[in-house]
Image (cartoon, rainbow, N blue to C red; front, side, top):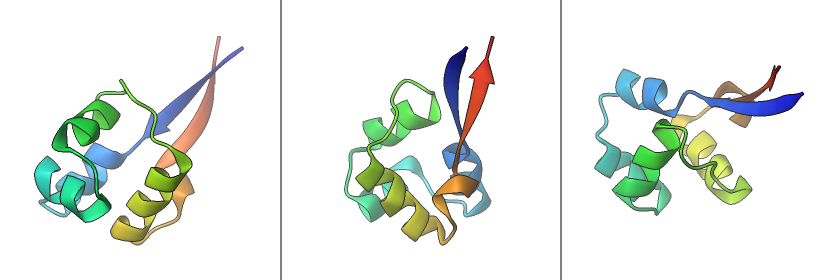
Length: 70
């Protein structure tokens, strides 16, 4: 079984009406990194995942979840 990481970064960013640039500046990465995360092209490091949780003020598990894929 393959494990897939589901993320809610785009959804949470949209709820706050933040641009990718604003979120990127808040966590110290490029706008392109945020875009890649939102498009499932890049899985963030643990450090970045924790920074996103801090900025969104929610547990990491509310941003990223693991799903099994058959």
